[in-house]
Length: 182
Image (cartoon, rainbow, N blue to C red; front, side):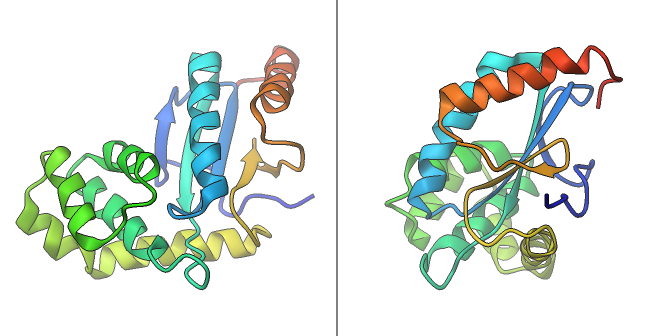
């Protein structure tokens, strides 16, 4: 079974309780239609599991098949520099069919970002380096497609449709009563 490299850490974009019993990491691509479906499933998991789940999203743009994926990842990371990563993340997935630059700047306006800073940060080395680091960590972790999930550092090989995935995570949470929180 593939292991997550590096493990979930404070450098990730984190959503949820840092002391949660379960850590879920997704490697995804903002233009991937499967990731678009997974986005809604993950939101349902976050709602259902509440304080028991810590979620992180790592960029794995499949630029060969999704030409807007890398640019969308740049928009998310640039928004993150202004404290609006998750707002931009949500807008990108909720509007996957609209990922041209004019769309990204519209989303930046909706996030109330400083547009000058956003424009500068889109192509900045820190943003590009962050995306490359996520992609390389995915490659080291055995990711070869999106979405790919890791639960508590181990690659999840089951169905990521909601009922099965929720049942799997719920069973792990119930079993975690026997071990320390992650």
